[in-house]
Length: 203
Image 1: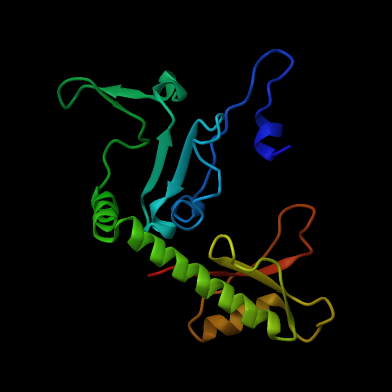
Image 2: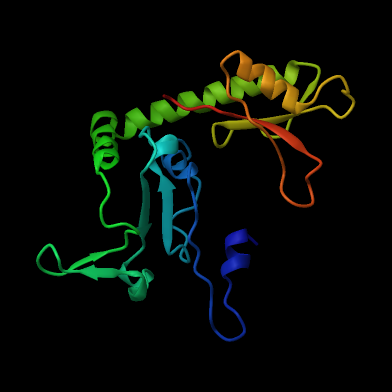
């Protein structure tokens, strides 16, 4: 049984859950280099998908995208209707006045690179991530948590038997040399695990 089946299986009252995946980074990765990964509207209960253009969409911060399966998947009470520009204009935006430069930049990148261009960019990011994680794994003091073979991000930690320095020391040393490699604790019930995180993006 898949997670999708468990989460969205019909309840005893005949009701079922809809799923709205937050693919902030993955939404710009999976379509291009994981075409066989079924995570989108091919799953019958996925009602909407959202992603961030500024993470792997090659656009500077400030733009995100959401797509609904059909108009019925977007509750009408979440839609604002304004008429100050003439006529009826439905909008789901949280702010009616925002610059559109990020949208233009995303549109330009889609046109310029096309599907094949994005595929090549994202594949290169993944290749670099897996190469980097493999190199880290060969260093004695570190242990991989993820290897970048899915999202081009990998995390690692200082091995438990290393006592001369911490993940925060590594992060600080990297920062002194111009590299931003954040160190942070895991969520509740795993606060003992301090990870270092490397994000590989085409910039």
